[in-house]
Every structure is written in C-alpha cells, then in structure tokens.
Length: 423
Image 1 (cartoon, rainbow, N blue to C red):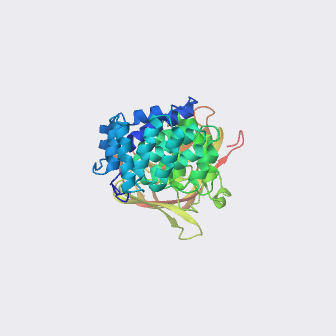
Image 2 (cartoon, rainbow, N blue to C red):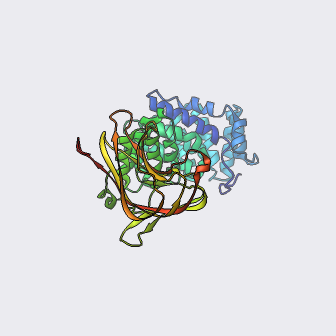
Image 3 (cartoon, helix red, strand yellow):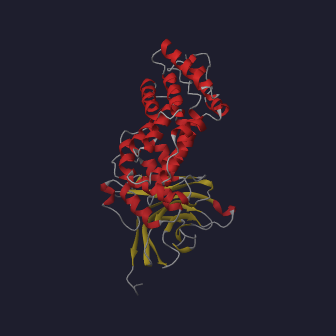
C-alpha cells in the first residue's frame, strides 16, 4: 500500500477533485443549487489520465487497484478490493475513500460522508478527501467548515492554490463569509499571505470580492503584514482610487505616525521610508547614492542625494504620492548643496498622478550652498488631478545632460495651502 508518509504520494484523483470542488464553490457563490455529490464524483473520475499527470502513484496496493476499478466503472470490484485493503490494513485511508465514492455513486450520501470523515482523520493530507468534505459542507451551508477543509488541502498541497484561489476569492463576498474567513486566517495559514496578495493582483472585475476579503481580514489584528498592505495599496493606487487608498494607508500606519500626518508625509525624514502608499519612495538610480542621513549641523534627518561623477538618470525615483485637494499651495523645504555639478540642475516637481501633467517645479539647484530655504507655488486643478506626485529630478532633456557630480541634501519639506488671493 502507498505509504502515507511519502511526501510525493498525492492521491491520483486529487487534481480532479480540486476541479470538482472549484465548480461547486462557484455554484455556491452564484446561488445555484449544488450539484449532487454523486454526479460530481462521476465527473471527478472521468479523466484519470490527467489525474495521473498531476500526481503519479504506485498501483501495487489493493486500495490503488480499487481506485482504478472504480475509475473504470466496476464498483463491485472496487468494493471488494477496498475491503480487502482494509482487512490487510485497517488504517488505509484510500480504501475508505474508495468505499465512500462507491456509496456516493449508489446514493448513500450519509454512509459516504461517514467514510470520508474516517479517511480524513486517517490521512488529513489527502486532497481528494478534503475536497469532497468541503463540497459536502458547502452543500449544507457550512462555509467555515468548507474553508477549514480547503485550508487542509493548501497547507499540504500549495500547488493547488492556482485552482482554489479564484474560488476562495469569489466566496469572500458570500453572505456571512467574513466571520468564516477571520476564523481560518486567525490560525495564520501559511498560504494566507500568498492568497491575499494574489487576490490584490486580480483585474478590476474582482474589486467586490477583494474588498470583501480585505474588509474581513482588516478586523483581525496582525493578519495583514507590510507586504499584504503594499499589495492592497498598490491595487487601489493602480486603479486611481485615491481617497480609499489614502484612508487604507493611514490605517496601516503605526499610531505614532498617524499623529504626524501632513500634506507631505514625513517631510523631515524622521522615519525610514517604507516605499508604500503615500510615504516616500526611493528607487535605485545608477550613478546616484540616495539615503536618509542625520543632519550634521542640526537635529533631525535629511535626504542625501550623492552623484558619482557619471550619468545619473534621476527622474522621479525619489517621490511621494500626495492627495492635495484642489486649491493653491506653496511647496517649501530646506536644501544644502555640496559642489553639485550638472548642466541643468536639480529640482523638485509636482505633477498630476492621473495623467502625468506637470503643475509646477522649483528653481533648478546646482553649485554649493549652505542650508537655505526654497519654495514654489502650485495650483491644483479641480478636475483630473485627484492625486499628485512630488518628485526629485535632474532637469535633463537628452542623455548627455544626465552627467552629475556632488551632492544635495533636503529636509523640512512642506505643502501649505494658501488663502485665496495670497501671493
């Protein structure tokens, strides 16, 4: 008989079982009447070649022969072989599953479910058994029970995530799904983060399901880690859903940082940039070293940009996404330059995130200068500019103008709204 402790020994019918449960999950979501388990079982075993391709296994044991005879439609032989396997080894989970399949085909669903539960206790890693128990739970309206069975599959066979994730996401907006998902995710399933990030990468059509899943999990402290928040925020930002994205980002911040929200977040670089949401983003630029450093002559930190005497295509890799309401603003900050050499200079630019249209820019900076203030005014339009990018760039137009040397430091960046008519 196949050893249950062999990690490569996945049930021959497991892959098609997962396909069957996928169909059942979709049916449950749409409110259709679930197909009878008997018909589902017949469909499960209609493609044994595919099952072999997913999970090849030995046919030496009686339970395996019983499964093969069931696949061939010979239920009498399958029953005899399964019973023989149990005589030889009463703990043969596969044999119980074959007997359950036979019972399902003959309409004895109660007997089948009892045998499947025995099989699950004997071998909780068997994907086919867990899939059928999940289907039975859905048939009876027990979503949380179904999720636990799917959790058992994914913990042992993460390869089935590609087949089960779409159905898990669809079920997130079923009535009463939130408590069920919270119960399962409270156990910190190893597949949970991968599933949530996969969900966040799905097309716009999945918005309702993703939102339902997020709403369920956000109520469970510690469930969403930094990578999960980043995936969710990137989804909202990518869809230009600026206000929901900003509110979610604020929710993701530690309480101490929530006390220091401003039009430009962390303009004095008090905290390490997280690179997500509406915090500072610092990307790699060849020919440039970018870091947050302590100020040498004052308290606090500064953003240091050191050019390495070569071409440096700096064009917005240092940036922050803002959500300035329509109106007039003055963007200001403190800068210090150390022999900054470039044909056209370094400048801060504010542009609309919706369409990339530049709204305003600071004066170009180069040469050497001690700490000094700089500022520029900008008018944020009422239409087509729900969010804005504040970015640092060299004002190059052609690659030859990218060469730069020296360094610059910035801190105390602010965006103050101006009263109407104020210069």
